[in-house]
Image 1 (cartoon, rainbow, N blue to C red):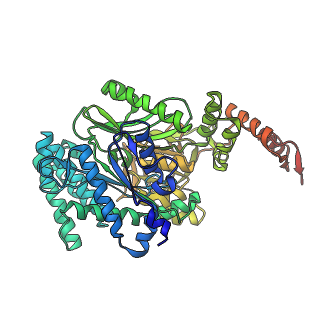
Image 2: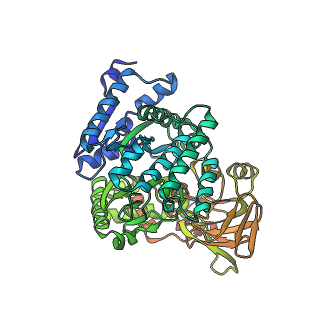
Image 3: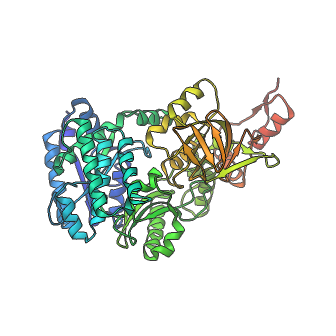
Length: 566
């Protein structure tokens, strides 16, 4: 290990208006840690916590051990969080719970692991219940923790936990675990822990420090999961970066009706419109929004539900966009009416949005014309060529949902990510249909022409990943996905695996069969930005054309003449 590595801190703290790091330290802190540090330095309300440097990721993956210096620095940072919150990690009276989250230098939404409510055990749950005066809330936190820890750290399948939860909901006539009484949640926690013990052959860990180090190891190991590797290959992200680990004091969006959680964008990531855009869920934790397990409400509804929190969020959004001079993707939690920011990062956006945002930020004097041109990646130009449904086509509408990512595509229905990948390899066009997607579905999403989910909102995993890839996506659709029978059901109609459907990700409409698709016309923002590019570029561009139609299309795209005509 180099001398410079020995001299650098391994842990960087943040909280109460001061942070050890800044947004310029993404290589060390990862994007999430750098964002938390920068927001703290800006005076934005961020729960206290600390970041373990990404430089340790590959060291751990090579040795499967932690240096003793890291253990000392983590314990010191944890004591600082205890002092700032007035809580005790593992304490009986006022327990401190933490989240443990990944964060690479380049954002990889949903590809690596997160654990919430770490520090829960049979003692701290009672302390949390007494302190909050809400036993149902405390046992709900415990339920969530056991399920997430089992999946992420113990590497157990999620399905048995989902089945146990579904059985409890059925027995109590509840639609969601937050509707279960405390006694039912307590019994569910016992069943979760019993299943984990049977599946692993060892007792579920109750010691908070053991839980913490297990979670830190799991986050480092998530750097090399299949989904993370696939994502890096697709987006040309170096394997050498590694991930940091962020440990943050929990704030609780599931504390009651004056609490909640959500995801917001400073501008619309699908269209580029200048508006606060996103979704929130009352009485929920962050996993509920991004997983798609519950369909959230539009962020505009927060103005009526909790107006003070909404106006504070709007103020913070404007502050962050001006500071970073780019569209921000923000995660937030409201605990008993108080807003906390948990993340800010550069927002992924569609090609259409990229052009509009770049042009409008020049008009707002946030960036220069040269910066605007440099911000348009080649993929954004490609996305502008995504087809649209022929307006004159006669179509059989079967369902509709939320238009999460624009464009249109037709393909055969498949219900499994592996099947999508296999059939796409053989040259088939497929549409991946799921109740909700998870990071494990990423390779199937890459292979599919479009994605359709029955659950989730505009900021769910499926929506965010599809927008980043420029693929049409509809979420929260008005249909039932029967993965066991390999069918979509809408009323008395059904669509079996292999049948063709067409998705219009711009309108949210789903049609039976294959529709005629057209190449769209370029809008004003495209022509404005390409005009700036013409002024800047040293190279002249011509087009190869075989027909008058080819020549006309080339001229539309800015070609200055014919380079080759066969």
